[in-house]
Amino acid sequence: MTQEELDALANSVELDEDTDSGEDKENQSGQADTEILESDDYRIDHKTLWPPPPPNQEHKVVHQLDDVTKDSEKKATELLEKLEHISDYFANSENLMNELSQVFDKNIEIFAKLNEKFPNVKSFMEILELNQNSTSKIKDILKHLQNGQDEVMVAMDAMQYQDIHRQKIERVINVMRALSRYMSSLFEGKIDDKKRVSSAVYIEGDNNTNIVSNDDIEALIASLGQK
Image: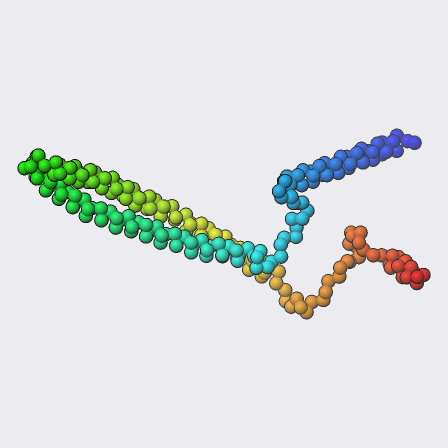
C-alpha cells in the first residue's frame, strides 16, 4: 500500500469519527430540547409542534384578537360606568354630611347659650358636648369621602391603559390583514385551483425512501400470482 493510500484511509477514518460525533451532538441537542419542554404536569415533544392547528373558528388569530378588543372594550366601559356611580355616591354623601354639619353647628350655638345662662343644668352641657363630638366625627367622614373620590379618579385614569392596548391590538390586526392580502395577491394564479391537474405524489428524482420502484411492483404482482 502506498503512502497516498494510507493518507486517504486515515482521512476517511477521521471523517467517520466527525460524523459520529456530530450525530451524538445532534441527539443530545434533541434530547435537551425535549427535556426543556417537559414537566411533571405538561409534556410536549418539539416534533409535534408542526403542523399548526387547523384554521377553524377556534384557532383563527384575527377572529380571536377581534373578540379580545371587543370584550375588553365592553368590560372597560362597564367598569368606568361603575366607577362614575361610586364617585356620584361619594359626592352625594358629602353633600348630605355638609347639611348635617350645619345642623350640628346650629345646635352647638343654641346649647352653648343655654349652658351659659343655666350652668347648673347638666343636660345642656351633655347635649352640647354630644353635638361637638358629632361635629368632629362628621369632619372625619367628609375627609374619608373626599379620599374615596380621589381614589376613584386614580382608578379611572388607570383604566386608560385599556384604550392604549386596544389601539396596539388593532394595529397588529391591520398589519396581519395587510400581509394576508399581500400574500394572497402574490401567490394568485390565472387558473382556477379547481381546474388544475392534481399533483403527483412522487416525482422521479425525489429523495424519499417511500418511493416504490418498478422492481418492487413486479415482485408484488408475482407474489400475488403465487397465492
